[in-house]
Amino acid sequence: MTNRGERFTMLLGGELKGAITARGYTAAAVADALGHSKAAFSNWLNGVRQLPTHVYKNACEFIGIEPQDLVERAYRRLLDEQGPYTGPVVKTSVPEFILAARDADDEAESEAQAREP
Image (cartoon, rainbow, N blue to C red; front, side):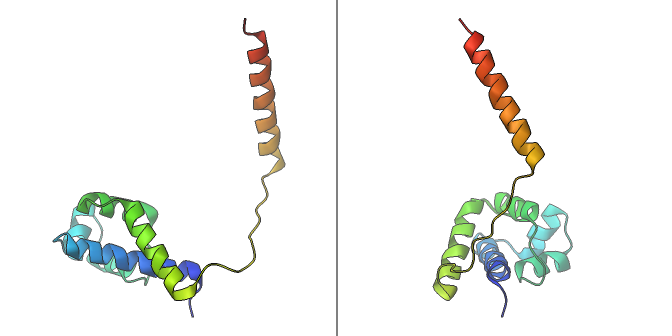
């Protein structure tokens, strides 16, 4: 069984593949137009390899479809298959130097606003 992220990637590739066909293109023609090998493009569309974001965006623009429309469809399919995500919330921490820089920027902005007439 694939994890949710892998399954979503497969569904997104499938949605793109369907959109390519529905718009009257072939995967080979889109691959050629975008400068990718037919084999690599096929692997991305079929979920064999993870679909790079820039390739996805370029293919959507080439065939004239909004990227977010396919993402929405793929996510709805994921929810239909697996239901809502119920796993643990993954927490990330912001490095201290980023927090310090943000605080310094906020302070400088406040001081500049206080000096304005």
